[in-house]
Image 1 (cartoon, rainbow, N blue to C red):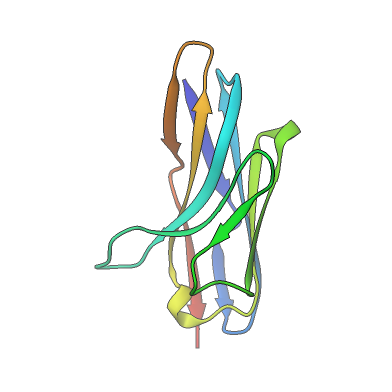
Image 2 (cartoon, rainbow, N blue to C red):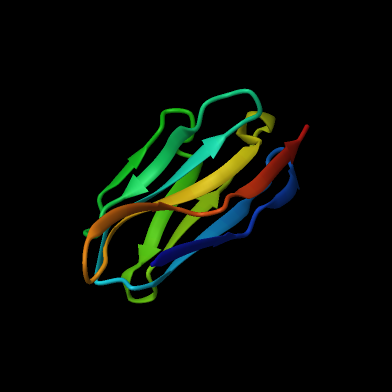
Length: 119
């Protein structure tokens, strides 16, 4: 089994910053891509950013230039540095990982962490 545990969410004023972390643990042989998604009330979950094991990144247009995704492969952890936050960034943020365990490959999700940006 693989678990993803997120941390770092909270309440921040517009223009502020937050840093999210997501640590993977369990029966892990290797991790391919890791990413962050978000889901606002009444909306579908949307991709925010992804990063491959080699460090290649992708960002949604809405966060380019403000958010930075990074990872520490030795710690099986992915981060999301969020700067210049806007009220429309308010959502539950979920991490996702494409994981090879010792027996199979699977896509895993964290439990989510709330980010609220006040105007």
